[in-house]
Image 1 (cartoon, rainbow, N blue to C red):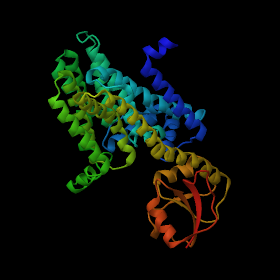
Image 2 (cartoon, rainbow, N blue to C red):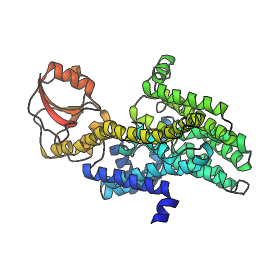
Image 3 (spheres, rainbow, N blue to C red):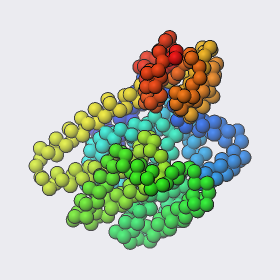
Image 4 (cartoon, helix red, strand yellow):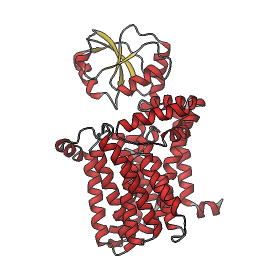
Length: 443
């Protein structure tokens, strides 16, 4: 056991923290969520019952929206099947292990190149608030691009002159087809090729280029609605100036500056690759939507760029106590972030159990509303709701004097403020943590 802890220290930490988070999920009895879970559950079940027709039908639909995801059904069956037929917790626990070990796999390939510590990288990964959305939203498919990219990098590094050109090409071709965000790693491979100049890296570039051309053709000649919602200059600028994007942009600029003056050529090109891949990801997102959970993919870049910048500065200062203070500070910030960002999210998801039970067991004599369209689909279809939940976007859409509203403190604050100002609360159905619950209003 002592040897295991010493020889595989990072793997042990990743395993233990995965177990701990899994226990937390079990304790809070995390159910299916309000995002894409219902849609993906239905899609998975339909695919199992009629695989060929449903696969063709979905691919036609997603291509018409401006993207291609040929492996999506394999991803969904792999992730949702066990949750559908046994318990949603199994899907969540599997998702937890995928996330932590994807980060670990990539870290092991980068740690000696950019000289960072695992505890620093893991702490930053967990400090970033939007990382927690990945744990609660197994539907976020872009996470699968990380282990595949890590596998690609491992293949490029191992026996650089061997003849596994076809494998490298196919793997590179598949990454942008898992999710469009995966295409950003072509820039990392570009700098890797400039550094190493191997035939395999050229085959990797070719694989990425062909996949990106396919995606670009579909994007620009399709409906475009999936990835380009409003690409006016004012909207793009507004998205870029959001706090999350400004922070990410600042980190990439600082990292780029340090990489330029970096003396280690290998570290320089690896950071160049991470920076420009991160900026490409940001370009995709600012042309899309500013939904908070989309920022979760930033965490895989921040987890390496921030420790690199910190280590770069610490080596210049070269005061030993600062190295220890950095480690303790990051661990402290990780705990605080978990308290202020992870705990509210997991309490919210736990409270959904009460709402699901109330909808299944109680017939509500008045209309019942919720502010999220995807959540409405989930409430009405995932279980056996006796009362139809209706979507409402603003107070003016409610015509009844008495009605029920599903309060959600991380989703519906704008509407709840109007309701509390203009109406009175009466009897409701409280949940344990009071984050998501059914409240009756009289106006």
